Length: 280
Ligand code: NAP
Image 1 (cartoon, rainbow, N blue to C red):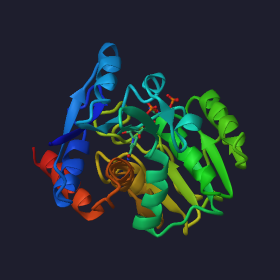
Image 2: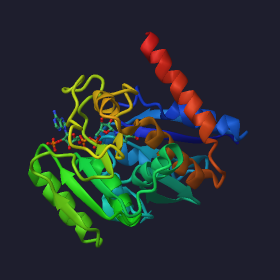
Image 3: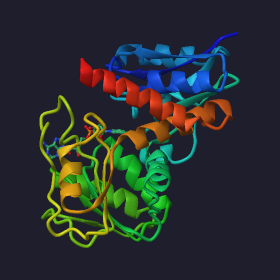
């Protein structure tokens, strides 16, 4: 029996997940079809119930359903309860388990693709939306030395910092955006994102940043953002958003299948798709 997995969101037409998850299943010789399931809020409950059927391995969940899907699941695993968001659902004999692999995918991406271990490091997070939330809890779990939170709307940064502090992580909020004194500076805002309101802009400058710092942008369209260009120009090492996307997907793939994810094949498929978009 061909089994099914897919991404639940609205809209999902531009998601890269079908491209690289499809490549992963093919590379591993698994008879699984991965689909894009455009699902409005009204249709979410029905879509999630359908996943209990044995033919479904599970699903990924993206905007705008990562929080609202939680009451529809049977159990939450990993950090998803603390984060308050689920990006992966696993169907185990009709019971639905929710996980959040966004933050752990971020930490693994830094380790594997930038040779950067976050343990003991001072990290500055720009943004306090859903992605920043997942990353902040994963950084706390990975035992960073400290997390500085900056957000355009300061109240959201303060709220996130307070939530993460409850996990015992040393945190502080930053009101005047200054990149001095950090080992790693992460853009979790949508500034610079293709098609967004702040396309072509960078959320900060790197004039005072440590030259040894790593700058990470989680925005992956375009692959080279103004934030990354500014960081490179200041001599910093950089990492774009594609590795986080691939590793959150790789961790989801491993939860569904128990098989090691073929990360190289996933990168290749995603990069080819992004190249195709640029040509269009
Ligand atoms: P979100 O929940 O909507 O949060 C958006 C964040 O961006 C908020 O902190 C918001 O600040 C900030 N922001 C938006 N416009 C801004 C501007 N003009 N100036 C300064 N700050 C601004 O979105 P999200 O889900 O966290 O996603 C954020 C970005 O990460 C998106 O570009 C998304 O594509 C990317 N992402 C990448 C991955 C990956 O795997 N690489 C995963 C998830 C998300 P306010 O609170 O002030 O509104």
